[in-house]
Length: 384
Image (cartoon, rainbow, N blue to C red; front, top):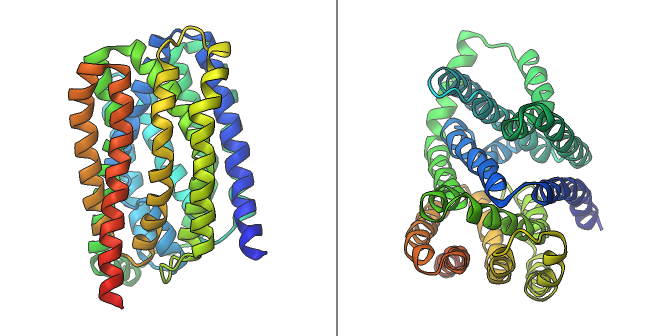
C-alpha cells in the first residue's frame, strides 16, 4: 500500500501537471500554423541542448547523492549556476537571445528543485510544485505571447521554472562554507567524479537523442514538418506519463541498492501495450477533429506509438543501473541510440519524410532497450 501511495502521490503531480502542459501545447497548436509551432520547439531545443552542457549535476546524480547526503551536491549546484549565468550573458550579448539564455538558467534551477523533492521523498511537495510550475508555464507563456509573440512563450516557460528558486535560497542560507568545508566538497567531487562525469556525458547523449531530431528536421524538411513532429511527440509524451512516474519512484526508492519490484515492472509493461493501442487506433480518430492543419501528425503518432513499449522497459533498466552507480552502461546505450537517431533522421527523413523520422524514433529507443536487455543479462550471470 505504501508503494501504491507513493506512486500515486508522484503520479498526481505528473498527471495533472502533464495535463496542464498538454492542454497548453494543444491550444497553441490549434491557434498557430505548423511552421510557427515548429519555430517554438526549435528554440526550446536549442535551450535544452545548451543547458545540457551547463547542468554538471544531472537530475539522476542529484537524486542519488541528495538521498545519500553527499556534500558534493552543493558543489555541483554552484558550478551549474555559474555556467548558467555565463550562458545567459553570452546568449544575450552575442546572439541577442535573452529568452533562450533565461530558459537555460531556469532549467538549472528546475533540475535542482525537482531532484531535491524526489531525493528527500517529499512526494506531496513534488506534486504541489509540479502543478504550480506547469500552471505558471501555461499562464505566463500565453500572457507573454500576447505582448512578445513567439519569443514571449519562451519567456513564460523560463520564468515558470524559477518557482524552484526557493530551494536554492534555503539551502544556501543553511550552508556555511569554510575553507575546511570547501576542501571536503572538492574531495567529494574527486571521489565521485567517475559517476558524475559518466552521468554528465550520458545526459549529453540523451539530450542529443531527444533534441537533435528537431534541429535536424528544420534544414532537411522545414519548420512546418517540425511542427507536425512536435505535436506528435507531445501526444507520445502524454502516453508515456505512467512509465515516467514509475521511473521516478523506482530511482528514489531504490537509489541505494538498485533493486526494483518484479510486479511493478510486469504491470507497467502490460499497461504500455494499452497505451500503444490508444496511439495506433484511438488517437488517429481524434487528432483530425482538433488539428486539421497538421496533415502529417496522424502517421507520425501511429508509428511512434510503438516506441512506448521499449521506452517503458528501458526506464527500469536505467533506474537499476543508476541505483548501482553504474553510469557507463546508460552512457554507451545513449551513444548507440543517439547515433541511430542522427543517421536515421538524415537518411530515412530525407527519403520518407514524416514517416521516416517517426520510424527513426522507434528504432532509436528499440535499440537502446535491446542494448540494456543484453547487458543486464550479462550482469545477472556474473552475479549468480
